[in-house]
Length: 519
Image: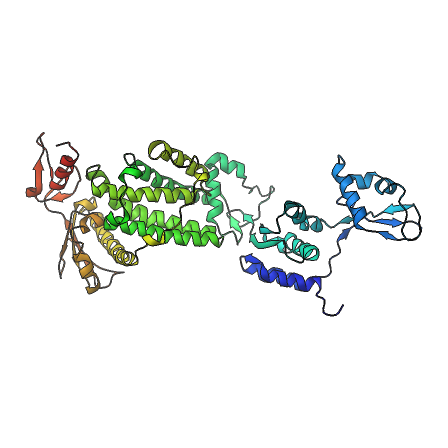
């Protein structure tokens, strides 16, 4: 009929409505449907799903009506061997008793011997799996990239032919698994990596982490070296979480947590930056870019968290009195970090996350949901993002990297063994001067050194100019004074106080011991 759309035209229209992940899948299936020949759904095989059609032996009339199809379907459902009933029973046993050809009245019929194309079988699976449950269509079909020619396409054509729409809202395709040299796995090459062996050797979480860390839109490689690298990533994440747990042993969030506005500036920055990272992670999750989500989390854990925040925080956590604002401010953010990392990583590091969760319920907060999988995933809180603070610490972190470069050179020259033994003199460019001067008392702790001074022309045993921060000059020398045996920082002798046992500690440590009731 003029104006009526063909199955191909309707299928192409439906392709445009589906979300294809990655986007290259859209171009691939559209090209295939545009150029494919007509689909012959019958196959000449001795096994498979039968085409349940009868032929009149006398006149050749084709018996293909809904009543007969429904009867055959009921017989298949009731038969012990399912569809085998078609091949084992005679035509007269399958048709209603006394059935006659509607055209010539004959009672002699023969069965169709061809079977349905197996792609028709899989393509119509949505009718059995979804439609019978009242679900209009699947949220996603997920399979390998070869299924644009197979399951994805047969499902599309069958869905459009039967229901005038694609049976899925989105389609995600992945590549194939190769060995470390990029070869297909085969028993003859002896390069097959068994998932069970990986689980037995490394644990299920390592296998899951490998899966999520790879770009599944391409072919992915697996082997001993790849798994060792993944295991190292896992070790760093686990150790970071252990650090968080270890420093929350005396923290009760209901009693001890500070409000965001009462946190120290460095802690407010980390709380803000956590939300920025979570926004990025959840954006990648929503785009099914799991490897990018994990990459963002890994970079955060290794860079801003372990190498900067937790490193700087050790002084406050270990030196100040247990109930001090300095320590509770730090612990408040550690608690938020613990909840965020545990719930966000739970879909991947499932066993580890549950182990952490049960530890938290026993030792920190017992009224949490019974399992991490009954808890809500930590979502970013926009109100905690401080753009101004993000900009401030973006500059301070670059400054810290430059200072670390100078400290490393001083360590190589054996001028200092640990950053605490160093004094740093900074010559600041105009863009950093006000920012640093406002935080000069705090800067030694941020840079993990004993003393920081400012000078237009810094002098020291090691002198460097900034690489990332243009106009910056850094000089490093051994710190003057004596070492506090408690915090390990160096102070002038007049800044020490004597303890009852005769030992001397710096004034800061003395105050912390008094606040803790030790002195």
